[in-house]
Image (spheres, rainbow, N blue to C red):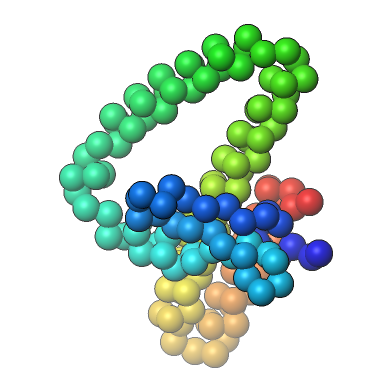
Length: 141
C-alpha cells in the first residue's frame, strides 16, 4: 500500500468520541485520511478562552509526561521500548497532521493571492517543495 502525504499511517485513528476533535477515518482504499482544512479552521477559530489556557495545557502535559516516564521506567526494557515506540508514533502522526494542515492552508492562501499564472505556478512549486521537505522530516515508511 502506497502512502501519500495525506495518509501517514495505514490504520485508522479515532479521536475521543466525547470531544469534538479531528477524527481520522479509513477511506474506501483502507488508508487513513484527515480533514486538513478542519485543523486549520479550528486553529483560526479557537475561542480566546481556550487559547488563554495554553500555559495550563503546557503544565498538564509536563506533569503527565513526568508521571508517564516514571511508570514506563518501571517496565521491563522491551516493554519500555514498545510503549515509547507506540507513543512517539502517535505523536509524530499528530504533529504531521497539524504541520501539513498549516502548510496547506498557507499554500492555498498564496495561490489565492497570486495575481498571475506565473505567480500561481510559483506558489504551487513552493508547496511541492514544502511537501518534499515534510516527507524527508517525517520519514514516511
